Length: 85
Image (cartoon, rainbow, N blue to C red; front, side, top):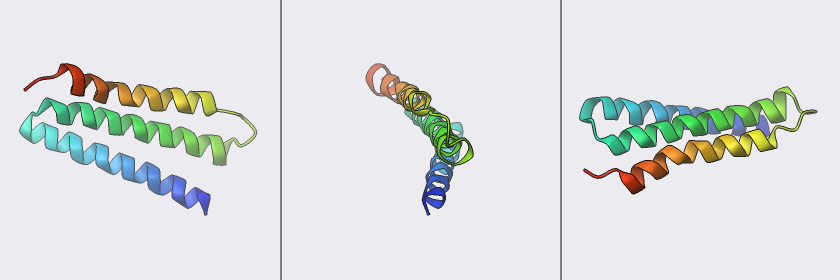
């Protein structure tokens, strides 16, 4: 059951990244770009979770997962703080 939840979370983050980046391509609003990068990073973080829990359960990738989640939030933080329209 947990594997289905992990896959659904990764698929949702990937779908959000695709939709937001596609919207950025049409409108050129820079905040959409930063949000799209954030969702792409969240997808990678969820992918690392799947690898950590399901593919290689004997290895501990929790530090890498948490670091990738933190790095995923940095573009959004930059976009919210330093970008202006």
